[in-house]
Image 1: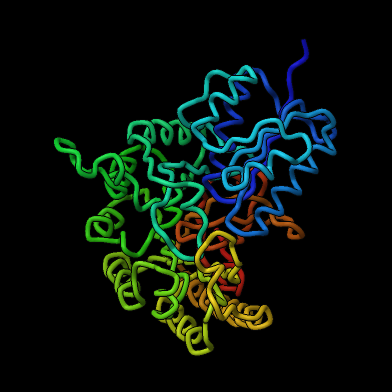
Image 2 (image 1 turned 60 degrees about the vertical axis):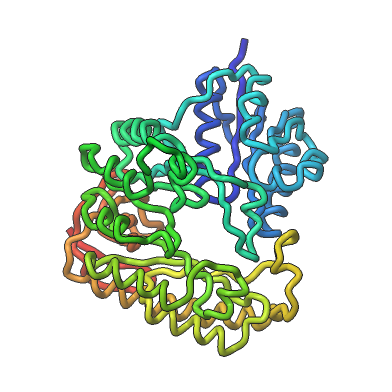
Length: 424
C-alpha cells in the first residue's frame, strides 16, 4: 500500500504556523508524507486567517487553488476564517471538513486515521527559529479586532509541557525559540486566577523557568501589551540570560483620542513610561511595534501625534497597517472613515519615519559585538549571509551555506537604512 500524501498551507500569524506544524507532525506519525511539488496530495490542510478581509480572500483563493492542483483531494480547513464563516468555507471546492473549534481537531483527524496528536512540536518546517505557542485566546474588546470573536476565552499550556517542548527543540538544533500566543501577556491568568492554594504563574515566571534550560540558545517574546509590563516582568527580563533584549509592545496609535476610540487600555504617557522603565535596566533594549494608520475619525493632528510618539519611543521597527474595515467589529460602523488616498499618504510618511528610526538604532550597534542567527544566504551577493541579532536587527555578514541555522558572532561596521552590515 502506497504512503498517503499531504499538503499543508498556513496563512496568518505565528500561532497559526505553530498549529500547522503540530498537525504536520501528527500526520507524519501516522505514515503521511508531504507531497512533492509536482505530485497530487491525498489530503490538504489549510490553516486560515481572518484578521482582515484580505485574509479571508487569500484563504478562499488558496483553498480553490489546492482543489484545482490536487484533483480528488480532501481538504480540511481550520483557523480563524473557518471559525468565523464555516458555511462559506464549507461551500468551497474540495472541502470536506471545517474545523470551527480547535477542540474538534482530534476528532476530525481521527476520521483520517490519525489518533495520536503530539503534546508539542519537535521541529519547525522550513525555519531556523521555532515558535512555541504558550496560550490561546483574547478577552479584550478592541473596536477594530475580530480575533476575540474567533478565539474567545483564555487557555494557557502547563509550564511543564512548554519546558519539555523547548528542551526538545533546543536539543534538535533550534537556536532561537519565539514565545507566542494570541495574547501572550495573559499567560497563566486562566489557570491560577482566583484559585485558592495555587500560586500565580505568569509570563515572567515562565521566562525564569525556561531560562534554566542549558545550552547555546536564545528566547524571544513575540509581543506584549504595555499594561502587562510591570516590575516583575522588567526584573525577569533583565535577569534572564537567554531572553533577547527586544520587545514588541503594540502601540496601534500615538494619539490618546484615537486610543480611546480603539478601546485600548493605556494612554501615550503610560505607554512611554513603560518603555523608559525597561530602558532603565536594559539600556540597549530594542522596541518594535504595530501602528494602525487611518483609524476612523483620525485627523491630521492625531496622526501627527502618532508620528511624535513613535519618535519619542525610538522604535527600531514599526509594522504599519492601513485601517481595514472588518465586518463584525464596532469600528466598521464608525462614522468618518478616512479616505484611502489619505491612508496611503500617511502610510508613506510613517514608513519614512520607520526607516529613519531603524537606521538610527542600527547606528548604535556599529562597533558592537553581535550574536547573529544566520537564516539564509544573500541573493545576488555570493559569500554573504543574512540573519538577525539578539535585538532583532537584520544583519548582513560574510558567510556560507554552512552557517545557516547557526549563531555566529560579528561586529557591526556600517548601518544601512534596511540592515546592519557586520564583519567577523
